[in-house]
Length: 388
Image (cartoon, rainbow, N blue to C red):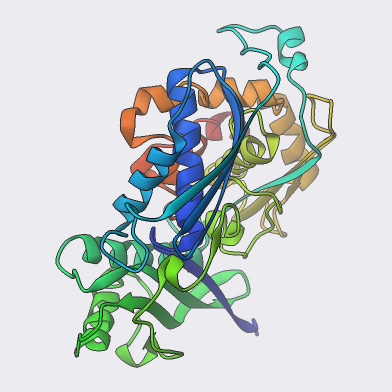
């Protein structure tokens, strides 16, 4: 008999302080690359009551007004005329220039060109995919994101008494590696004062958001703001920092991920782009029907362009040996940093997508499993070749 276990994942809305920092950092990367596709930048942000701190190191052909950009992100998240106000908060900065960037590869680079762009840091990057959902994402994080988006959408449309900062948690029952039911849902949402029926309304919102989920959930298993009075939240209550929500950004902690932040880094940073390439590889293996679950691990060494190794783990669900799948990936995919940038157009996408940005939308609701964003690493165009 297969033993049942319960796995939980959480998500947060755009107004969570950590996610404010991620959005500011990624909006800055978009801005630098829109103006100069060869720009290099690392932008980190910290936020607390009344204060935003921006640290940026960059090499770019034009300037970016980072304080104004930060205020725009905070305003869009809903922090105006509140305890934390985008117009009144203090913004402290620490900027420094990096050495001149070493350019970009051409349209048809040779091996020598691609080898010139080595990894700048040691990295173990991981990609994961499974057939829990249509997006090939784990069910707990997919549903947690769904609830968080529903809360944020309600706040921006017909529920103005919801404040910007909220957290969701979904617990899923697994039999072996298969999800077989929903155990419970927890929602912690900041609420404006004086709202008598907030709990009832949030229960209804959760039930509506889950209406088309195959695994039913009843109202009794939905818990709302049970741990504390949550009338004050956001940066007025708790601090934020870029890169502190890696589990939310990736697979809800059901799979391994690098300890390094994804947001706030330009496409020369292998910790970020390597994670995208590894997800692409794992997603295509599952999409090809070669495994029900798949993790791809790629190891990089400082100063080398080619990875030290590419490994596949299908958790005994593969249609062929894991080593054979890894060999196929090595034959079909180039995991060198410059090759990843070129395959996914990571330097030109910000200009193509305009003011909406390419990197900023990734900073909330995850970097993977986002069909509405048409992300290049979510394509399954390698599946046929993997099956051949």
